[in-house]
Length: 112
Image (cartoon, rainbow, N blue to C red; front, side):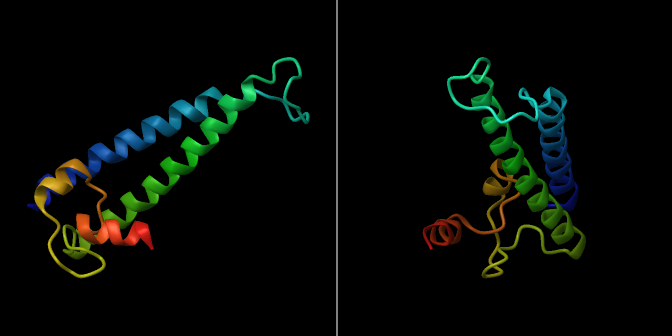
């Protein structure tokens, strides 16, 4: 994959991640500092708070992966597996610009 296309994909990913984080952050927590228990008045907001926190964690992990991808792009190794050094197919990078491994390597990595 050429560098300009990789940069375009990574810029788009940064925009997606930062927009999603801003949307969640802008909502703010639904509960106060009080200790809420399930079944209390307004405790239905706890689910949304927990969901948002999980989503925030995913987005922060995506942001870290994006930073690593940008470092690889600067080093000239974007598109090469961090595990084997084998090329990651352009189709995979188009679908998953933050991919760090080939599909087979990623499957083995997730199973271990």
